[in-house]
Each structure stands twice: as C-alpha cells, then as structure tokens.
Image 1: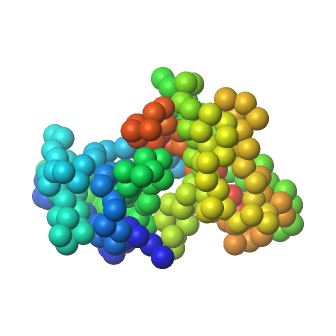
Image 2: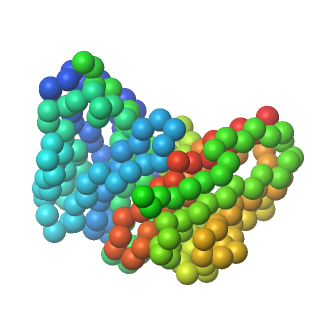
Image 3: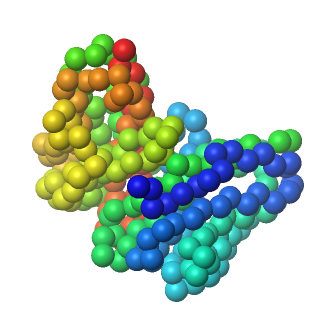
Length: 113
Length: 113
C-alpha cells in the first residue's frame, strides 16, 4: 500500500515554461516532505524540502507547495531548462521516525529545447 | 568530494546464485539505508542501520535477503538464492544526523536470469 503516490509517470514541457510535478499522500502523520532528482545511472539527489508548518518553500527556480487539507504537494520549476530533464521523486516522513522515508514511484520530466 | 560508493555497478547472474552488493557510506555518517528501485514500486526501503546496528529491516524478504555492517565504512546486502524477481537497481544511502537528508550512492543494477 503506497502512502506516497505520483500518478503521472511522465511529463513533457517546453524549455522556458513551467513544470509542475504532483504528489499525493495518504498518511496524515507525515510532517516533512522532500523532492529528490535522479539522472540516469546516478543515485537520487536531494532537491528541496518543506515542513508541514509551511505551505510554500522556494529555492531559486524550484518551489514546493504543500496543501495539507488535500494531502497534496507539488513542485514547480520556473523556467524549465533542458538540464532539468530527470526523474523526480517525492518523499515523506513522520516526526516519529526521521529516518524512514516513504517515496513515490517517480515522474520522468522531459524538458524540450 | 564526499559521496556514497557502491560496488559493483552492474551485476548479471543466474537464478540461484548468491549476490553480494557493497556500500561505503560517507565518512562520519552513522545511518545507512538500503533501497530497491523497481518500475512498479519506485523506491522501497529494504533496511537501515544506525551505528552499525540494524534498526528496521521490515522491507526486506527475510528468507533470502540479509544486510550487515561489518564496520563503519562498509555495508553489505546479500541475496541467496537470487531469483529473477530480484532484478532491480539497489541503492545505498547514508545520513549524518536524525534530521539530515539522505545521500544516495549510484546504485547497483542487478539482473537475475
């Protein structure tokens, strides 16, 4: 039973436009959320995170939005660049176990030049 | 340049053979994780250790999988006997504190024929 779901396996966006990647979760005990980016033949790397006490966190071109009532978070990339083409994983954890991350199945983003 | 290393990067073996994957966590990190990436499930947590002691291995098939940390610089994941359904990419990750993010290695791509 997946507690973190990424329902879009892939997304294609034109360079310069906004990319929006979505993630839904079912566990109301999750209080910290992360996005990881993964290039082929490499391990995932941390991108951005958000605590449940916030509804938005911004880092350069990347912004994560959290809607607790809908149990939904999204990652916005503006403007999208070809180098952003990768698989993006959403992850969540509870305050009771900082170490146990629950990952989604990933969304493959393709940014077309 | 501190990073998690994993060997081998690729492994092709026949059903029934023993497979050993190795991981060297980032020096000074005291928590080590083993994940498996499959197309259907995304990233699944198999097991993790803190200060070399196993904390949670509930995600690991007990009958054929085993994970150990012989010392602080080496973690191993063994599959015996291997089966075709074990074919996946296996990632090791490490973290330094309870609130730190996890740093992933490049993965071992395992193919069991």
